[in-house]
Image (cartoon, one colour):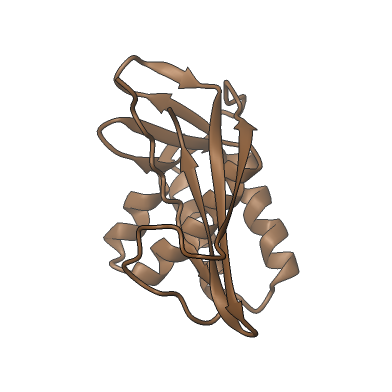
Length: 167
């Protein structure tokens, strides 16, 4: 039986307007599939769990996590909330070798922080820097498929989203 790891990591990146509730491909929508090879081990003593559910654990080395955030913040220094997300995670890492970023931010009850983390998770997945463990068979997943969906309905009108799949 095929299991689909539907990490809708996330997020529909809005250009301006996104039509909610549509599950079908719209006329004019394009889809591109890309196979991403993931890391098969983490060589860092500190690990950040990005996502965890009953089927999968998605994690990354602290070095890659911090480097991803640092590069992002160099490019967009005005994003103070992203800086705060990084500070919250780094604070926990000081006393723990493994931290669960999503749970730390959920405890803060800030949907915005969770959303900001989601963009970093998508970037880390897209760059193949994550390790994904299938809890069902205790195997490390070597590759995932990224689908990029784009829809342009006019100037300043459209949407784009990326979906990460495991089959």
